[in-house]
Length: 282
Image: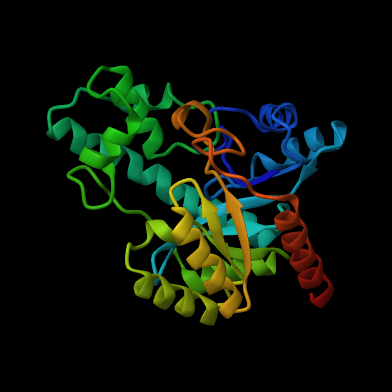
């Protein structure tokens, strides 16, 4: 059993990379990929912890892209790649510039929250909307972070502020130039219309997409089957992950989602074969 979509405290999770490796091992998993948002800063410690415990780790990250708007998982990346690291630093700067603007909007809406409150919610390198949400929960305005996103800081909500995003073509090229494999994250969150999902995937394939995350916490069994068939029809690899965030998403368990996810080892084997073949072609 594996989990190829996991977040550490280097982005918006609550556990460190070594803690994730330890939890995965104790939970009976054979492989995970730590896919933090727009950063690879947690991968060196993850790689070291995996080596020390003889645990299988696939390096990864999750980047936000536009045209079309989506999240792309990058697997097997060289996390020391200069172009990758430089681009991620630029994206991180855009995120940092956005945070005070969101806080300002919240203050205008009557919420007494400051950047100091937000920074107190993070012990990693990336400060983002989840930490703003946690600050509002800590102050008693909401009972959980999901409600904050739904009402205030999610896409199109009153305090939402956008940030710089790579185009899909740029993001996929960035992953592939770092010797990685590009996979579309949680397609079911893009649209409820399967025809629209197919159109988005087709557009991303033209940009170089190599895989689809078919098994995911929010995907029904019927949608998962559809996505596996779609991957096959497009000659794409399919993957699976829970989107584990630790206490930031307490209902999601590592490797099991909400208790009903099973991702077999051969999914990681197929992904690794594609990573290896991509590197040989480099």
